[in-house]
Image 1: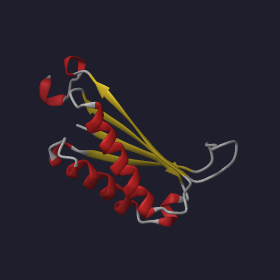
Image 2 (image 1 turned 30 degrees about the vertical axis):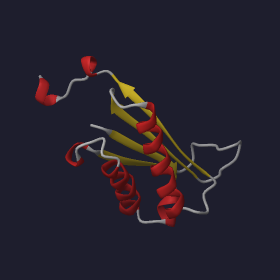
Image 3 (image 1 turned 120 degrees about the vertical axis):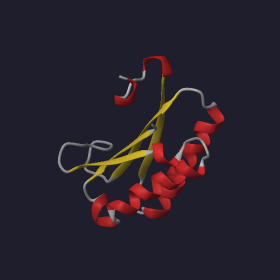
Image 4 (image 1 turned 45 degrees about the vertical axis):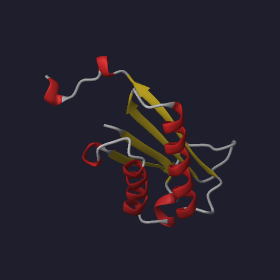
Length: 115
């Protein structure tokens, strides 16, 4: 916990090394001070054919962040801003870079160690 899932057009993999993209999101999550580094998970899902941005095949990056409830709106907004800022530095030619953060309830969360 948390999970950062990066959806992107496949061309993003050619514009930068995937590991650097994963590390950039991980680093911003760490620097936010909101999470223990060992708990942060980052994944990248490239899309080759089945996507559309504004009705055409334009490059995109969208990060879906799923975090445990309890952070303030300001904390989440700052995290969003920092991640998009860093991705914009890595990918200045991509016009669509975005993130959304979703909270989930501690009461309904379960992982292997809890069973």
